[in-house]
Amino acid sequence: MFKKVAGTKDILPDQISAWQKIEDAGEKIFTSYNYQEIRPPLIEESALFNRSLGEATEIVQKQMFLIKSGTDEYALRPEATASIVRAYIENSLDKQSRLCKFYYTGPMFRMERPQKGRLRQFHHLGCEVIGAKDPGIDIEIITLADTLLKAFSIDGYITRLNSLGCLNDKKKLIDILKIGLKDRIVDLCEDCKLRFQRNILRILDCKNEACQQIVHGLGIKDSYLCQDCKDHFFQVRAGLDELSVPYELSPYLVRGLDYYTRTVFEFTHDELGPQQNALGAGGRYDTLISSLGGPDTGAIGFAFGMERLLLVSKLLAKTQETGTLVYIISLGEAAKKASLKILYMLRNKGIAADTEYEGKSLKAALRKADDLKARFVVIIGDNELQKNVVMLKDMSAGTQKEVLLEKLIEEIKF
Ligand code: HAM
Image (cartoon, rainbow, N blue to C red; front, top):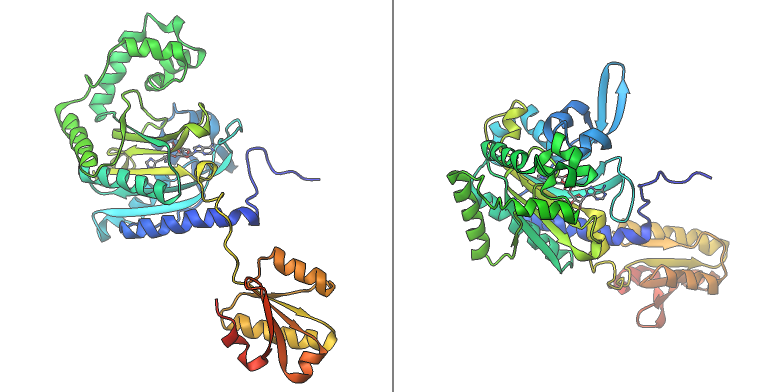
């Protein structure tokens, strides 16, 4: 028997309603913020991700699903930001509107070691705003994420906020770390020893306590930020304060992708456990668009992991509402033929309807209607057929009555 690939999940019909609630709430809120949906492909040239996320990042080093075809190499997208920037440049979307606001949902792929909240195929719900460096957009995006989390019935999350500064500031921060840590390398964890060579910034958000103590001992604070970046960050914080959007300053938050500059943020939730505690994350990437051949313009975005949202959302716990389904049970061959006509008549009127196909007894068919949470059951046998009526059972009221066939639609009121 075949089994699903490790780190993938079947989203079964009984889970779909929670997914749809999240997608529907997302669509409504993104639309009210004037964002438009975009659907880039699931595969891209692998070089797009190497360039955008950074050659030294964990995703590019270890986690890309690569597909070779002759001399070409493609990757299943590990995230969508790079694809959306590629689409923005390739389709000259900046010529239509200087400022573009996109949202998206869909599967992402990373070759990770599977565990709770960490999959190889997972789903993002995210957005990107391309075309402005204004701190007002940072405020908008963080407020938007906060609004979404509330709409998803999630509480108890923390919004962590930091600024990495511009490219020059990031270089300054790297130098501070190189100098400050060069005599402490032996005391760092094995991962951080490698990070010191390859991706030193990631030492800042290492979860190992010894590494954290060493890093905190350097007393870096915001010493690496230039005045412009300090001002930008001040305005972002002031705007969030003004709107009463809560956040915690998190001076060691750096994020695992190279493209970030200035504002970075993360939404963490304790119920996800200590290792994979981020519901979502994002930040500015003001140099990515020009580095991929586009105009010199700013951008910012975030993505939530849908599976992680569902792990902590109360949407799943909420009782399922009674359905709106009409379930038809026919007794005998002639009634069966007539019932098919009724079935299609209801469906053509936009009323959700289904019938019993498995030859069940009346009792078993009624049980099935109950399982399906049908709102009404229509029973039709030879007697009813002769009188041109059906027996209509109102499942929530627990009543039943004979109804003329031509009055059936009138009687079915949801
Ligand atoms: P990311 O932090 O790599 O950022 O992913 C965003 C979120 O996706 C994470 O916070 C987490 O909830 C979820 N996630 C990541 N990896 C997995 C996994 N293996 N299994 C389950 N969930 C996972 C990005 O991808 C950026 N593109 C976000 C962004 C958009 N930045 C700017 N714009």
